Amino acid sequence: MPMSEYMRDLRERDRLERDLRRKAAEVAAGEERAHLARELHDSVTQALFSMTLVTRSLEILLDRDPAAAAEQLGLLRDLQRDALAEMRSLVFELRPGSLEQDGLAQALRTHCVALESRVGLPIVLETDGLGDERAPLAVEEAAYRIAQEGLHNVVKHADAGQVRVVAARHGDRLMLSLEDDGVGFDPAAVGPGHLGLAGMRARAERLGGSLLLESAPGGGTTIRLDLPAGPSTGEPPEGPAPGSDG
Image 1: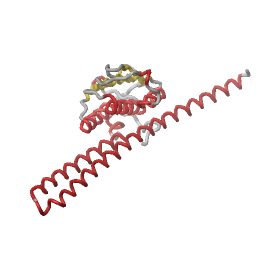
Image 2 (image 1 turned 135 degrees about the horizontal axis):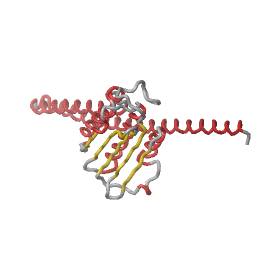
Image 3 (image 1 turned 180 degrees about the vertical axis):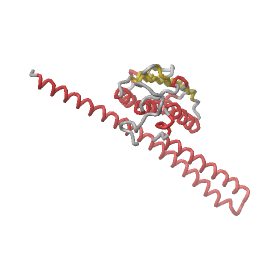
Image 4 (image 1 turned 60 degrees about the horizontal axis):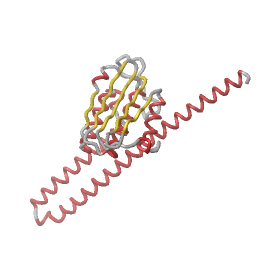
């Protein structure tokens, strides 16, 4: 084969690989937004339904029993406060505004606190190993999104009593693990499109990293993420991540 044709084939292969990686990232981002939109819709619908019931009770009790009506007003106020907190936490999940400025550790902390308050799942978060070093924003965002999806899977599928999240930097690598004590499953019996695993792996591999999953029925599940973090200056990275909304 002439050298010119060989080089042309190499360029074409590189272009196709870039297109595939971009498409995989777009699909992963779409899946995240889709499941968050469903959660937001469900939470708003439930909140509005509950507030409607309380409002009807108020209409009945207002003249008959003012004291009971006052109690219902208090319940309505609580429902409104909880609905607002729920929506704020979901909006944060859609766009973690603190990630670029405050870094991965703070973004994970905020997300875990919001998730605990929403679903009552105890989350042990360890980020001391990150230190003050900052990875590129694209890497931090990938780690955050993978942690987010992993925690979503724990809530939805694991029936866990606790989950442990550890993020640390080892030289030029950013490591993150999620370990739950839930029901576990047989990875060989789960198709590649389930549990968002394909999207998580594609996100990691797009940045030159890897994602491993360990699980067994009755033995809980562990996800291990390894990403290249590159040289660090300890300063916040500049500019939005590739493919982000910023």
